[in-house]
Image (cartoon, rainbow, N blue to C red):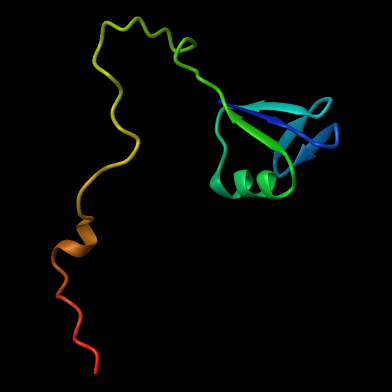
Amino acid sequence: MYAITSPYGDDGPVAGVHFTNGRATIDELGAGARLYFLRHGYEVEQLDDTDEQGSTGDGPPPPPATTKGRSRAKEGAAPPAPSR
């Protein structure tokens, strides 16, 4: 979840996010919208939603957000030709 605060205290939609009294809370925020808000002086805060998911600490940790290693597209690719 993300909390976004407008520097203008406005109401209504901005970049697909509805603001009330200059504040909005949304579940997901795309990279483009995040950049827009940051470039225009908005405060973007990622909220810790671990408690909302009911985590008790009994299970395994969640999977990593990113994967490590080579991408599949590069596995069969030939090395680039040397430049002259």
